[in-house]
Image (cartoon, rainbow, N blue to C red):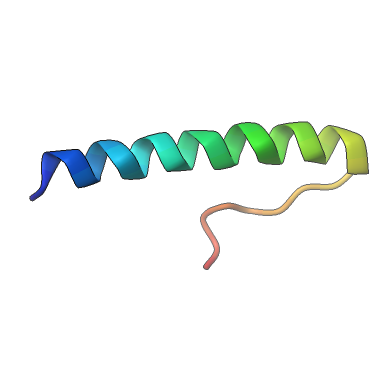
Length: 36
């Protein structure tokens, strides 16, 4: 496993979750970042 890739994926997932949370509050709805 590539550790740098793993860390990047975790950071990306966290960023998506934060953005989803912010936009979810604004829009009154949210999407599941785990769904491709």
